[in-house]
Length: 232
Ligand code: FPP
Image: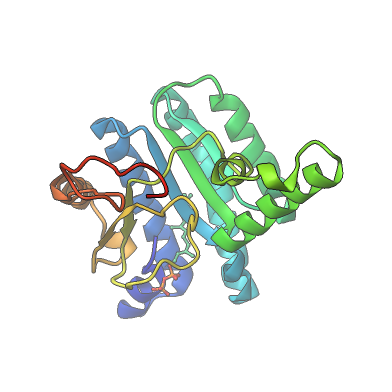
């Protein structure tokens, strides 16, 4: 959800006001995904690198997320959305941790859109945490190093139940991945749009989904060819 700061600066506003406007765009995005029947949505709300911003901005973003959760959770629940989180949640302020846990508990039985909030998240941290968990299983004798496969890694991510990413939407025009879902985006289709996040509307989500529908996904293969026997 990139571009809140630039959106604010262009209007002579404080950065936090860009984040407030970004929150509205996030609500539109979630409503759009529910309406389109998209099964999974992960939004990148706060990275492990975002702690390097000013204390005011960090407090502002985390406070905004906590307040948004408290006011939006009823509507999310009514829309059959299941709310989950990815990230080092235990390092967040206590009251935010409680709000996140309450949101997850409240919507745990829902069967519609899974809305996964990446917060205090980075792809490298997630992979380091997965490596640590796998190493602990090896040390405890429950797993042998020779048995480790890509599936083992996938099972030790924060949300192993979530599928690989199909469509990666980056607003704000930057052509980079910025440490987001590094494992899960291996074959994601990238969609970079120049709009700053507060300007993102449902029609832009529709455009991204339509563009995704036009892409040919090859997963390293050649369409129409039979795969060779493994190792040949
Ligand atoms: C990146 O833009 C945005 C963030 C780090 C904060 C995102 C948070 C929200 C949109 C709040 C709403 C979230 C929820 C879950 C309700 P930036 O500040 O890096 O923008 P810039 O690149 O223009 O400086």
